[in-house]
Length: 302
Image (tube, rainbow, N blue to C red):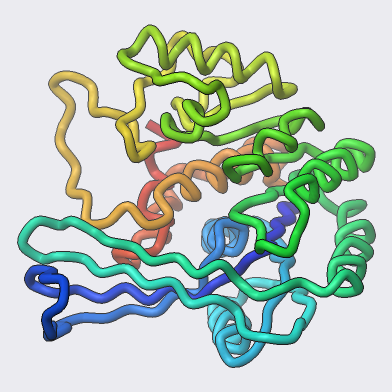
């Protein structure tokens, strides 16, 4: 079973306009709401692919009710701790003409210490039944940046594999606990290493360097277990650049693309099918909506 933790869930609202003009009134011709947070999205994908998963997290207010209602509708098992305040709402505007997306991310509510303690107890109980623990997404401002590191250590002590998908200080401190997998894109890797990465050789060397700081790190460099020298190069937004002569693929919006790769790796390692992972033919189940991260899952098997 794959257990996911989202400390800072959200409701993502994506709207489409012809073109964004700051300071002007716009007519929206399409809108879409999704439960969000990287861990939640990972569980949604894993559930669609027929693997066992439980999503854990903290939710608040009416927006939190929306997250839980959406997960119930998708039959995603979840255990959330209710907290005061309101789960954050993120907003993305997509321009029809250019495909350019402008995103606005809220910080999230304050987390009471007793709620965090309750969540930790729930995780400790369920980790005994898990094979993979996915720690994903940003931390609310009131939560220590070392919280993910604590969960990494707890997962390792429980004997399960821990995937860490976050950024900034939370990722830096989490690396000290040696997760089994990390998924930085180029920009996040630059922040971790404190230098610019220009060209394939520098990206590959950065991947090797990061792999030495995690147990069996696989960054967002192509899912080659420790073999970063053979991994494709990333574009600035974390998507692999297409190989020469490869068939171009339509890309409508990048929301959740990296999460697709995280849960794909988790499904392959956390499957109850004797470790064989998910049947690649099932990935089409994850392509229902433009803003859902499941669209990129198929890349893992190619």
